[in-house]
Length: 449
Ligand SMILES: Cc1ncc(COP(=O)(O)O)c(C=O)c1O
View 1: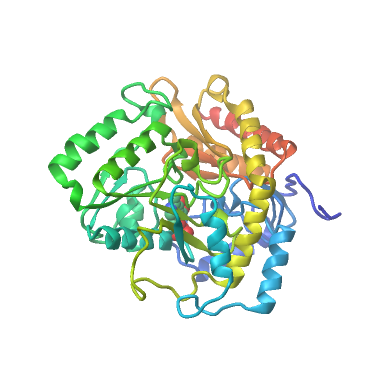
View 2: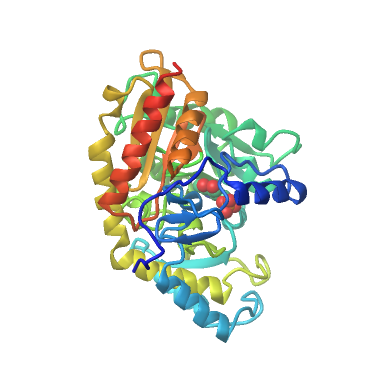
């Protein structure tokens, strides 16, 4: 329930950043690593629902959700209550050494979301990249093979193993030296830019052919490949969904050659697309699924969920000090209560509502090339010219910054797209407000064409 001092909609009272926000920004500059990339000067002081309040009392409608993390909104009372209760009982015990019932409890609930044809087991970590690292190790261990295949545009994290897979922006890899060997990247199906003119449902057949006829015949023998890792919807790469047939084809190839199919659902999972996992839209049965972000509503927790027949490694082969921390698990359990108790349905409903209102943006705005996505994972691609599809990162930035100054938080994605990834709790009034602000910001950016 919203209290008297709280609001559902944005309210900007001054030019941004305000004086107190400026102080924090200067303070931060003095002590914090400059590698962090801040798109605009938002300083967060308090959060509730889909609202972020800054130290100067401005309120923002948050359609970024801390990079799709705050699935249940900010500080949802149920999540806060469960965190507080658990923090008073047991904060840490190191699940790598000892037992506590919270770990199997959450694992059981995650396994219940997986296809029923197999039993699955779970390993908990603290971040998305850790889930990726663990999955690489598990795939290598289970297959006794070491080669990996990933996709251009993919983002799997920034530690050295996951960075070897990440192929999103060269800055993310530059100067970090030699990464994992035996990693090959292939194109990701991108219907809007498909040279063969395919649609969202049909794009990617030639990539499957490339994989089977070139990569598997000329580069890596299939029996050397441990895993193919794919985001069912590329997140950092531009909110680009893989067609269902494409995921099914990857599964067919993996099954044929005993290759592990790893689905990175760190950004797309936990109900965001209107189903628990984005791969559910394709009806496939993955070997390993990765989750993080939306799982803990902001508490650091990740997991990889693998078929029992795959997760057969020996005690000591993989572990972590904090993974499966009881407080993070309490937050994840509360998050699941809410997602399964209605938020996933709301994500589907609100996704359809927003799509219904912005699908025609390419015909209404000269700089909008494409609107795509599933549920509340919506990408808007900004171009200089709809005919040539010339990418316009400068105009994209103008839209995002313009929206910020009007009280709406969004994030960039890919070279020239905007990601719309609000908490799954939003209602029509908030969606309408965000759409109005986006439209004003797009109109303003168009003036600089
Ligand atoms: C699909 C995907 N995988 C992995 C990661 C890495 O997660 P983290 O930043 O928690 O390490 C991200 C982060 O954006 C992601 O989107």
